[in-house]
Image (cartoon, rainbow, N blue to C red; front, side, top):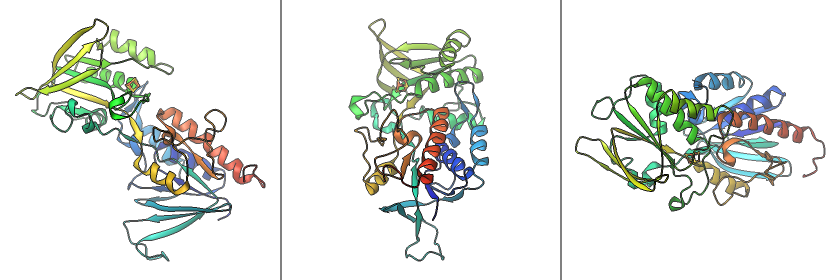
Length: 356
Ligand code: SF4
């Protein structure tokens, strides 16, 4: 128990933080609900802005986890705190003969918790007017990454090479109708990256990005946007999509308004890609409820102070890292996880924590 830590969530933030904590000599258990670690990153083919392989980053994080006790395929069902000790109950679908508790339950103890439950992608079916789950040639950006990874080429559901591809920004973000006012931050640059990748694979295809604003917030992102326009002739149309319809041949009619010219714009594409944004992971609300942690109106967890205590919470011994606090890029998530690990280690090494 002495100096033991439980990290909840095995995406890039949880993996990075767990590895860093173990490197500092702490006893670390990482709990992941899926069978494998890696979270959304494991699904991605290449990363912005340099299009490096996502697997390289994942391999680096996995290498750092050699001293971490990894428990996958489990759900946290209860958390309680008594003084400086946390009790975490996990429920595994796999029977555990060593467990003293019934029904596949295991009870773990720790002196600190790090929450890294990450995010879910917005459920594109909620924007019914865009036709995801209704029209076969409407896919999400994550579906497109699956296709990039498979390296089998990009085809329509009818087996045709698409001549025109649309990419729709802000799906489920900055959208009052679905209750998500925030910007998901990384989907603009993902859309630009994916447009370039589509042009690399299908040079003859026309690619259209439908956007409200382009938020190229970090270093080398703006250059990527210029590259998309100047080298690859990607078209950028400013305007929010109003609705889609399907032609008998499976192609998609996209209706939007070009807000730069004020004119309605209608175009037919063979494939439509929806850039779905971040929403809080389903497990985040559950865990916040067990601990009595405050979430914002957006459902992401509020840290103790967004400037100077961004990895701490109002509960001593409970720390947060990565997208559990809101949209974040992979590079930022890694840096944030390292910062959280340092804060947590300082807390554990402090004999009389000021907040205890
Ligand atoms: S990053 Fe771009 S696509 Fe994503 S929500 Fe913000 S403005 Fe929309």
